[in-house]
Length: 230
Image (cartoon, rainbow, N blue to C red; front, side, top):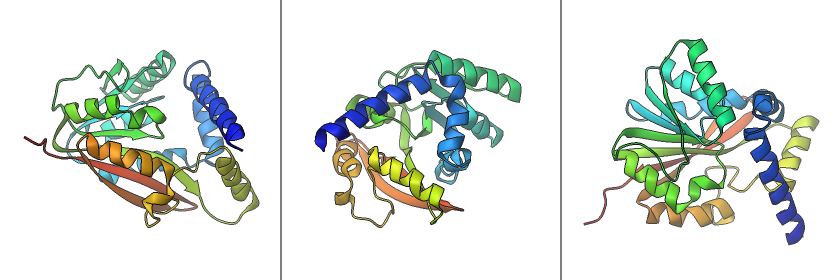
């Protein structure tokens, strides 16, 4: 069983890499299909939890959130390693007639000054978001009492056959790695169990929220920057 899970994980990493790079032009279509059209609603579920005016999005993808954030009055920046996604995001930003600073940079080496942002957010990130190097960089660029918002997963609800099949596929491929409810014990979640201690060691207080949407549930992790110990 362990070897099959490992194989699935390896194949998923390859698939995600291709989708985010060579197949970036298909990203929106595939995201729409695997979410039954709810992908944008899932992403925007983080908006009520944003604090302050200066926002940095890690892994901005094709730029939908950057445009939405700017239209809502935030000063926004984005960082992504994919040249294909950067191209799509810049095109979308120009078409929307807005301004947003985009850089090609990994989350572990952000080219921004310390204490530049009130909120850093990442929707559906890969494993990089829980790396110590990423968390230290996020801590550095956040202002005092700033927050990191992570949207690690959303779950379709309901008893319709297509929903059950898709959710079954998510479980088989190991993509249901955090509690399906904010009330579930954190110990039942490999992601939370592994990452919570790392988040805290890097100076963050961790809180989890569940947002209920029509036909789905979204989990949001709120990591609040704590004052550094003397």
